Amino acid sequence: MTDVSLGMPQLPAADYPAEVRARLEADAKDIIARYPDSRSALLPLLHLTQSVDGYVTRTGIRFCAEQLELTTAEVTAVATFYSMYRRKPSGDYQVGVCTNTLCAVMGGDAIFDELKEHLGVGNNETTPDGKVTLEHIECNAACDFAPVVMVNWEFFDNQTPASAKRLVDDLIAGREVRPTRGAPLCTYKETARILAGFPDQRPGAVEATGGAGPASLAGLRLSRGEALSGADSGQPVRRSSVPQQGETPAASSGAPGHPSPAEHASSHDAPQETAVSDPANPAGPESEEGK
Ligand code: FES
Image (cartoon, rainbow, N blue to C red):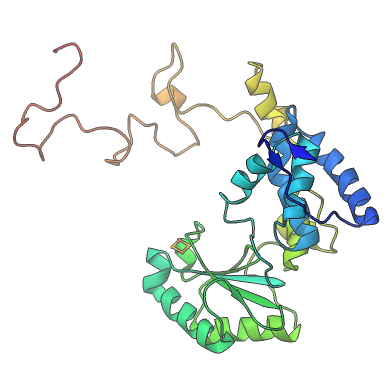
């Protein structure tokens, strides 16, 4: 058999057992039906294969390619671009220590070093029992709770080396562990299925997060040039902060008590009128008309 797009003999990759493949095909059909263009389903499909294999295998790549009529090279390019897809087997719990600037100075580096020592593994390595994979992670936009540790993408805020060691010990021992916020913790494979877009069926999971709410077709409508209504998001339509035709800036102001852009004093909101910091240009930037 030949992979026509690559013009090369197809790499042999073991197929899924018939029962697993039938289940995956049914799930894939469900995922693909969500999108106007089938190739848009690639990211959730990769999560789906991770929910079975624990990482992106060659079998999983070939499965995605077949379902979406893509080449295995195209699927591989996407799977190797995003860090949320694993390229080798990982533990039940992916323990990520944020070592970006703020977390690092607040103790993230110390936590990572202590966990390496405590678990006897390096970055991106898994404990011999297959329970915990340790890794550096980049900023997860939770800097105000630094230093942050994430387990299967659930947040554990304001950690210390001692609390992080307790956390991994509890994970390994199978004791209950609760994230600081969000849904209850589940294994890497279970998380992958939720990320593929299947509902979290665990008791209390929806209550913990408030749920995702009804599906929105707002993006699809916008792409077709249709006007949005409040029903698209279940919320009243948010007004633009940019003045519309016939409006004064004040009239286009957002939430009550929130100044319009024209009134806002922050230097980050608009270019300054003068160039005090640029002695070579004391009059400020030349306007387009003046050129
Ligand atoms: S630097 Fe760690 S969450 Fe932002």
